[in-house]
Image (cartoon, rainbow, N blue to C red; front, side):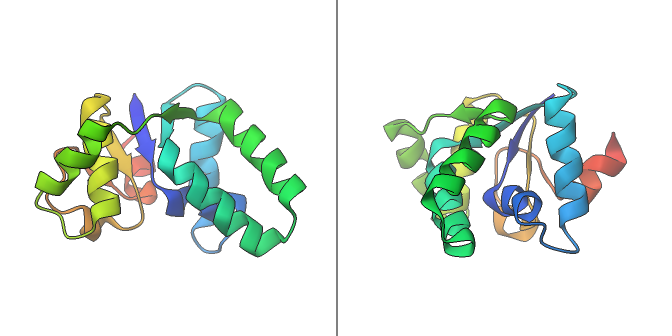
Length: 136
């Protein structure tokens, strides 16, 4: 199954943000065991780095953490067409619309996020980490 993981879920796992870290870390394990084909978008990588650095205050360690992340997750590019199509989606948050546009182009089966409500109008199914794990 091809899934796109939102930044908030990635950070929940990497920063052990309770109470959300348990489900997020299970998704990491599933990606490592190749039970899911997990993706993050290229633009999310910069957000992840920025927020990790804000927490860790160590650029070397942040880069090491990104390298680990890249072994588990496929990186989906963001195209100019995605940027334009995101504007057309009936979603209020452009960043979320951009993820949805990338997911649609990439034939992603679902987007996993804690902000399900922000993805109303997404052309791709959206689920919370807990609901995704329950439905398996």
